[in-house]
Length: 104
Image (cartoon, rainbow, N blue to C red; front, side):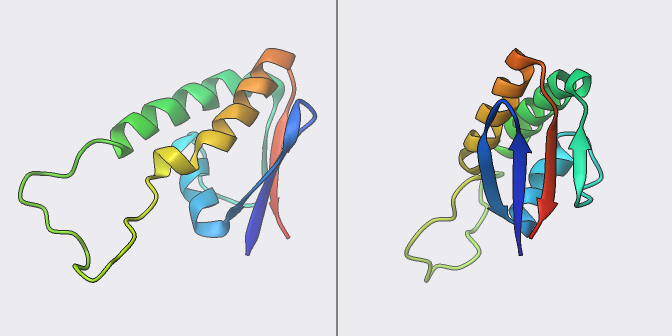
């Protein structure tokens, strides 16, 4: 089920639910949908998301084996998937706006 992030400061961003939940948790929330950030909470959530992405983007331990050797396309890293949400949060922070998300 898709989850859409909205803010008056930016166009809507839609993710698949499992990606959205992971990004919401990285922002410091429980991952519940629907949810929202008040304008004054956006800078803190943005900082937490950036910090969480740095940890999530750390290289795997040496000797780690990929999930499947048959995979032709590598998975898209969460840091790459987060780029549109980062842009939305940055715009909301700059314009002093709220952010909300909901499934549809």
